[in-house]
Image: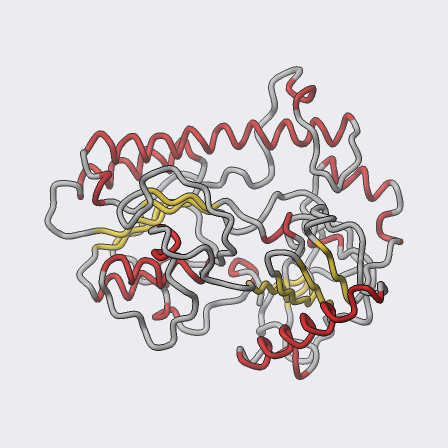
Length: 372
């Protein structure tokens, strides 16, 4: 619905995975980034490990220290490790790196967009170093066979047309799992998976009764090779980022349907796009004047870049109707507030106006009834 550091919170912090694991006897700890609460202590971890900042240089050694302290203990542990990389601002690229750094397919290939991607890749290398420290410590301690490692991200690339959109560039995220339960042989799966599938996967692996309110499906049948898919579709949503931009989506193995719910603002909502050279290139080319269709349908087999909207194409009328209906049913099942009109932020939320250019511009605090 919105960002924790801008005034939103979970409806019930007891629904966090850590509480289910704590109830099963796990020691729980957090180090580094998290985007669920403005105050990490609210989440309920046994240990919130202090670091000067959340770059890998500080987070990875602290995580390694926790692992060394807990590895010989009898109590199992859950450790959440959050790295700042690869958020903006990126690390400076090495001279000449831009020669080997093509921008994402939806962006023009220019010196500035290549340099932007080169800096992103430099940050990705730093992230790799942090991950290597954590994995290396697990291996060194001899606990790899008993430790499930889940490496994932909270959104796609922080580039225009990716992060804070419901394109695959925005909702397609890194997911690498290593450890027991069939996650040890380096296989790649093309199955449709959602983040909500991770909680039930952990419960399934550990033999923990899943909470009755839990959504998602265990991935263990995929890991075991017993099935090719556990989902025939996955869903995505965005309401507020820096500014209000409500939209919902359903994605199948072949098609993506996106519906936008803001009739008052039909172009890009620039505060929801991270500032950077690639954004500058588009803004200078009058990007803000380009209207975004209220409905979008993409045939991902023939259009993986999601650039040709098939909503007006009569050849896709049946698919469009099916996905419209499927999204409507999902929104009803999840009691989506957008079904009843505009969604208001919580009192005290910090919001950018949709017409602003940058999330760094002055924000206003929402107090019941103020316009959005």
